[in-house]
Image (cartoon, rainbow, N blue to C red):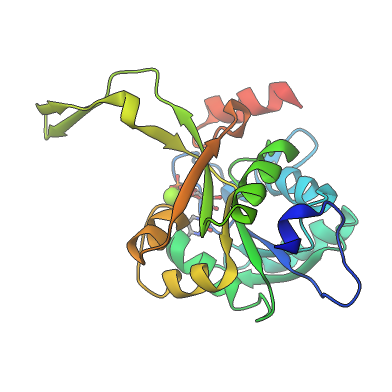
Length: 234
Ligand code: CTP
Ligand code: MG
């Protein structure tokens, strides 16, 4: 499969084949800022800028679609222009859930796209090596690939405040984004319903998903503490 074995952007005659969808349409309720989380300041720029800039600079990504919070489509486009992100092809209004936002963004991804990488704007620190790992896995025949990290803490299943079971943490991973999928597989899966990540939809649709090493720097900004942590790395 050609797409997974190249590092250059465009191959003459093949068109644009690896698309990135940036899920940025959340409200950021837990962060509790005045503006949606994607537009909270991270250093000099809105949080969204960091991941979009990294996708723009990635040798693995050909084009980008952003799902923005309602009313923030124009600021998102202006930001992309300001950053000189020519790969940003569209910005759509996101939906009420993450899955819905991805579904709406996928509608802007052309039919001939081969691969779609879905990334949370809430994970600004996006290493190129992780993109390489998830996309290489697709070239090995998987329908999808997700970055995962081992769990350091003991994990228990609970019902209310009662502990029901202690899980075998060696069989569990914490999953991040970017998550990569064969485009037709993801398109079918997002029609099936809701999930907290795209992989869960693909798994439900019978897709074969592999896990590759994630990166602790892909921390998800949920509260002010993570925002400050990521800011300290810039
Ligand atoms: N997201 C989205 N559309 C939604 C909800 C979430 O595109 N309707 C995106 C967020 O912008 C974020 C990612 O999905 O980049 C992960 O979601 P989360 O961290 O939960 O962000 P928010 O939903 O914005 O935060 P909160 O749950 O605290 O409101
Ligand atoms: Mg949320």
